[in-house]
Length: 306
Image 1 (tube, helix red, strand yellow):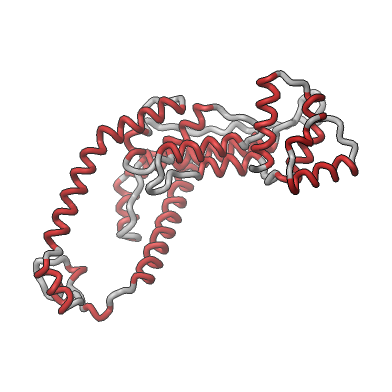
Image 2: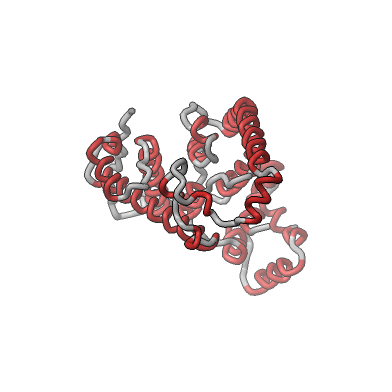
């Protein structure tokens, strides 16, 4: 158990049972064992710890990760549902990250992030829905999987059937005797990119390297396009204009141009991270005590409806 989780549970139980902190501090040694017990008694021996606030700060310094809230918020924004990860595991991991924040955030904001980071194709169906609570989001996801999961299962069964037909014994014998791709050479029924000599076949390792490199290049181009849109204050629908599409097709023919909805999501994601960082920087600044007057320019995110 981390220090943050220990502090959270202890404060929750204290508030639930309305126990004075004086009693909690008196019996705190009963909650420690092993290395933590040795650390606690060394702390009591060397420092005059009498209040819970002082002890909590010492626990966070010793067992906490010490990260500021804006880094934790960025981790929440970037946490996506992994392939094969269940909805319950995904929501539990996301809300566990939320519990580590020192300044609480709204559940509506968490639901918005959770919708945006769902695995495809569930995200395309759930994201446009008006959902504001975790339970409503979970029920909507489960209902969507129940309705559309049957169609996906039928498709997978059909694909496996075709795969079994292609891998019949006669076909396997042909592949064993001729493991190269000579059958595709000079075949007018095959696409041009498949009509090549098999001597230059790429290895699996190099294939993964090329795939990763292409994905990085794709992300760099998308980031540059998004930067151009909000830097020059262009409308989001400009990404679908014929001139820009033609330019990108000529320069990078294999680049998949994102839709206006994807661009809007990327801009909103950057906006949320910036707002979280600014809130963290000025968190704890009290106007009546601070002689410095801070003037912030309003950050505006122009939302253009499709």
